Length: 183
Image 1 (tube, one colour):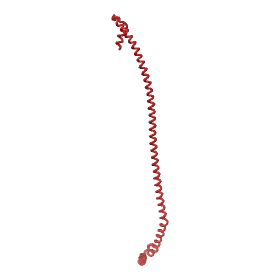
Image 2 (cartoon, helix red, strand yellow):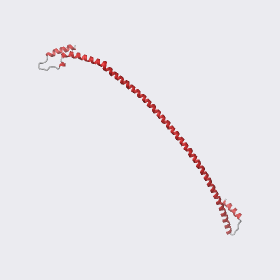
Image 3 (tube, helix red, strand yellow):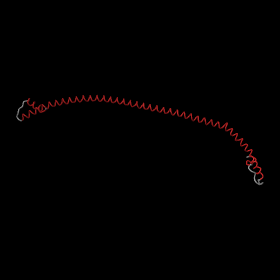
Image 4 (cartoon, helix red, strand yellow):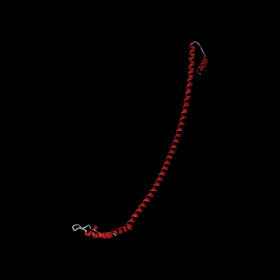
C-alpha cells in the first residue's frame, strides 16, 4: 500500500512542478522510495544479524565476566575482612594477656619490694630498739650515779645545815632522812 501511494505521488508530483522550480532533493523523490525502503530493510537485517550474532554475545560475555569478577572480588574481600577481624581479635587477646602478665609482674615486683622494705624496716626497728634499750640503760645508770651523788650531796648539805643550827646528827640518821625524802 505504501508503495502504491508513493507511486501515485510520483506520478502526480511530476505533472505539477513548474518549469522554473529547482529539481527536488533526489532522496525525497517518490520514485526513489521503494529502493530506499528495500535497502533500509536489508541494512536493518544485516545490523540485527551482526548485533545478535557477534556484538551482543561479546557484550553479554563481558558483562558476565565482570559480574563474576566482582562477585569473586567481593568474596575475596569478605574472606580478607574475616581474616582481618580474626587477626584483630587475636591481637586484642595478646594485648590483654600482655597487660595481665605486666600487672602480675608489677604485683610480684611490688610484693618483693614490700617484703624487702618490711625486712629492712624490721631490721632497722630491731637496731633502734637495741639502741634505745642501751640508751635507757645508760640513762638509768647515769641517773643512779647522779642520784647517788645527789644523795651524798643531800646528806652533806643536811649535815651542814644541822651543824649551822647547832645540832649534831649521826650520819646514819642523816642518810635515813635524805633517803626518805628522795623517795
